[in-house]
Length: 447
Image (cartoon, rainbow, N blue to C red; front, side, top):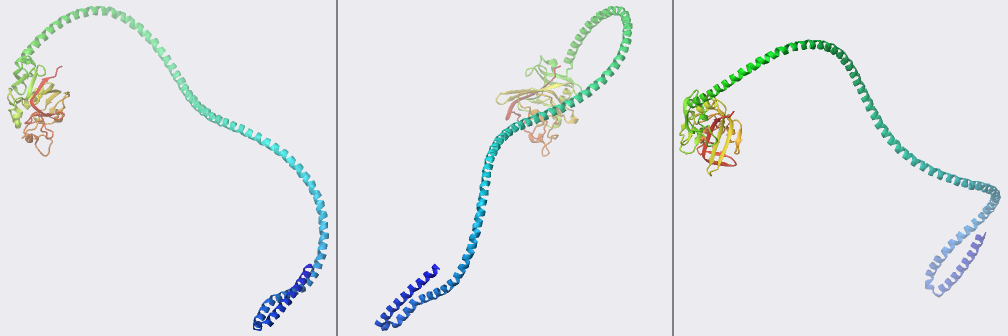
């Protein structure tokens, strides 16, 4: 209703404004007729919104009457709703009372809950304490389990040992029984042996009487043996004197001429008598010189037959001969002594303890024995090799005759220009040593 009254007042105010605007517009139009057309347009533009508004207000007034009826109907509905709200309020009051009662119960429950929470906290602390104790107990339990496993393994091992010892004891027991049986047998045998011993003692007594007689005979025999031994020693000495005289008459080495070095005659089976040069100055008495290079005038580029027979002069350079050396060294064990003098005057000496050469059918192959010396063992390279000359190629070189190439006979293996029969004799020891004097000597081994 208030809104309708407000709309009516607003309509009257707008109408009054419209009348004033129209009056003003007429006065303006009368004063200026040329602007009449413009005034009409201006009035239309000014009044049209108001006319639209008036139409809208009229429509709202018509609608407001309809709404008043609706409002009265709504008022009656509101009254019914009001009475319903009053009833609801009464119900609410009752429920509020019940709610207060429930609230008190809830407060009491909260108090009880707090007490319970306190008990729970206390229980949790006790549980935590129990957990710590349980952890310690678990650790102890694990340690106990480890110890138990160790004890179990020890027990198993001890059980196995007990079983093994039981078997051993069983075997020992059986062995003991066997020994007891053997002991009984041995006792019976021992009794028998004691009887035999008594018989033997009686026999020994008899033999003792006989042995006294035998001892007396032994003493007589020993006296005769001593007399025979003395006579035998005398005969051996006589034989040694005779042998030394025979050696001087028919010697096979230079040993008999130890105190008389120089050229002497030897008598060797298969060759007969031949001269050799004996040396007692370089390494003691009794040495046969088989090769010598002291003058440098003799050529060592010789054929097989010449090397077999020997060549040169005892007063200068010579080679004794392969056949003679073979015959001499086949009689007994000989040692080889080599004496070298370098161009600078330094001397070198070394020896081999089992020197010999084979027969002609085997190429006069070289054998040396053990080396003893302070210089390089250069002869070892030629051991077991056959002798080679320019007309007898026995080396292992497939491309050349070493003896022809180096113009000298030697026990070549492969081509080597440095040896004691070389055109210019030399030796290898920390480099090449050029030699001005060479001697090769042999002597029977002592003992």
